[in-house]
Length: 531
Image (cartoon, rainbow, N blue to C red):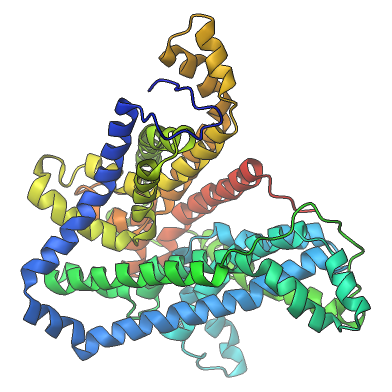
């Protein structure tokens, strides 16, 4: 590792270690260069043809569909997440610890598994329709299209808003609200004037995560047969509509950047008040049971419906199908293999970037760090498409190999490792490795024997998050996996496409278990308090 420079608290930018800077720049370039291939491909289309493709009615419809989907889901998540956060922090809701955990759990269910289950439950000839058939109910409201996509994505992304808002509410000083009440403000007026400005940055942060997830999600729009960006890009690519897929990908990136800009404007420079006093919880009175019913309804729909469907399939046994759809343990092994390789590669690639940003902050180190976040903001289907073009033209030796697949995962989830590592490096006192140097240690020895053990929790925490999110990645896996290489997510998708839903139950339960571990990592690494 690069040398430990005399940087005090890490604020010096006058001495940039050459080796560390080159390594960080190489990582940033590796993340950005494949995406530039999309721009080159779009330029090859020609201006007139590009304008024709972008302005045709179907393309405009896809843009509007995606905009409506993101808007409705984000608004619905705020409508669920903020009240639930307030109930579990500021009121006397019974069993608050229990409800805090329960309403957070939908986050562990991949949205495509939720969509899978909802189609099986509420689709034509689904489980609920068969259950109600003896009562004369011949059909249920249509689950496909925009309503189903909004329902499923809301149920499995509102915890982003809930968690960030809850953290802001817990850090607020409730004496501010008490002061507003002494000025004859009603509870609602005090909430609007005092609480809302304090939690707005947190709500904006959670809404940003929700909007980016919705915009990048491929499985739910595909299962719900809703023409959002990701579904149409995947279909166009599969039908050799390369030009359309490329231009739609660039549009999707532009919309993603627009959302990032809007979030920063909404969030502003406001900060939540920390270290304040927490007063007595607000009594719910006659609203106690409706509040309990609200929390129970959200948890029931989000958790019991998919779990009930999966357990029903498990109880009925896996339907007899062709041997190609029978679950094989190697699918789980393959998922673990590529996820472990990605976790290791992302951690190694993130080390120089995180160390340079933490110990040698400068404009250059900031540019390198921000560049690595590009892949995280770009949807998986767009990244997969970019690497298909890039690999087939410039990286043919690794095209359709596990190396390119792992490279895609690293680009996608590298910021998870960098964020955890950078925070860990900032917590290490630079005087400690400097003391080791005075005792005869080489710069690399001081890093290995002093700095590295101190940042180990953040290193392993970031690697664990990369591992767990890689296990669930769907679109990049579908586009870049080698021929004949199957994982848990590809097996689930194959079972869906061929209509044998029961074949998805075993890999789905394995993914749910892994996702549960992801929530455990969040709780242990971030100190998430459920009290």
